[in-house]
Image (cartoon, one colour):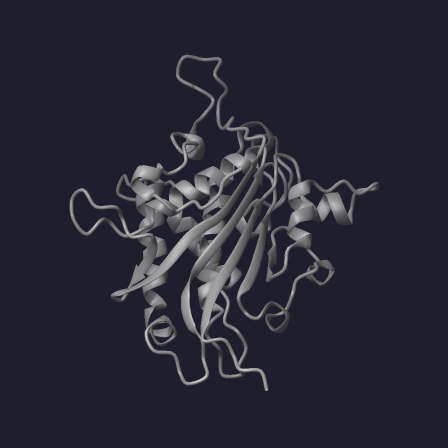
Length: 289
């Protein structure tokens, strides 16, 4: 009899594809097939999860909970300008291809996958894993987005408020997993992220890590580093970016640098391309290439 492990770490892989690239079209519709390396990496990676924009989920090589041990997960984010219904981006669009419209929603959707994975640790009455429903995800995306109608708060504030709310809602379910698991159940020790991006997807991957750092709890005292964890209900769950793979970053977002009021790095690419500095967030990113 094989004894269950005493500890459990969640491994989450995120794949941001490039402008105009879409796994559903490039692999299942186009002839000849021409998926990017990001799409190929997603397909080759172990894990349960979601391929964003793929209409027939039965076609995707997703590992079930049993095959992945309930600890490996992977998520694919289609490139801007291509269909991604999960973020209310239903079709190919010129604004997406040219100005990277709906890029913010894609990054926020990736952040919500952390919540989704944590929810999957709980079971319903039929002993099935609970997931973040598409409807709930859409509602959270609306709340997380940049909207000057919400008391003049921008995306950073909205994102923190909604992500924290969702995390706090899970506190009671996470507590027995982090503090004192049931006999025979492994203790949850942390989350390890593996993030990949190509072209504007690489810019989105950079922004994802930047925004993730903004969700960490504040330092305990002035001059101290912020804890590298997600915090809820007095508990801390360590989080790290184990690998950040960036292929040909293209940070052209919004209006190009051809008019005085634009610099080509607007909206979600404004001030987010620089990765969290090691002096403040030392160790958050383990390896970046």
